[in-house]
Image (cartoon, rainbow, N blue to C red):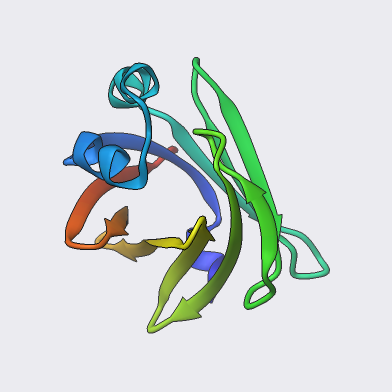
Length: 134
């Protein structure tokens, strides 16, 4: 099921991301950079079933490697230290991050050839849309 996410994805739009970053506690300066950045998302899977998600931009590149449903420690692009678990739920890749008593989730799904990432913190939802690079 993860196979449909594999590839290089280029961001084409980002809605409400500033409000989402505010909701998770990102400071003003990093939010300014985050709002201007249009990262590529590169997803690969190795023979052992380890998934790699690399977010690549001119500002910063970050990468996480994980196995589905196995919790791991993540240092996010904005330097939060989270306990993260990623699972497949109804065809969506759902990433749940928890830190300091807070929790956020990022739901990624492939629809009509686009990868839609919904970043959810409480009632704040940001939607980031990617298309597959040829």
